[in-house]
Image 1 (cartoon, rainbow, N blue to C red):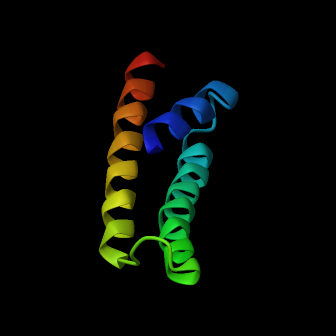
Image 2: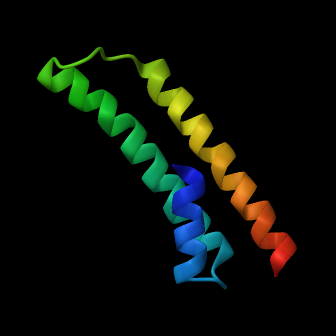
Length: 74
């Protein structure tokens, strides 16, 4: 998720490295925890905060891979 979002942000705003990274990080955190809040509020699934933490870690790792590619290509 983070890699996809970072790649799209790189395509839309290729010169704004810090801005796009901050926006994508906020999106990754909001979406990851949003799914857990949805589970808690609706009762569908199981609310587990560590699932959100794991999703954020995975999203940040994807972002880092795309940021490395961006740094090499520019």
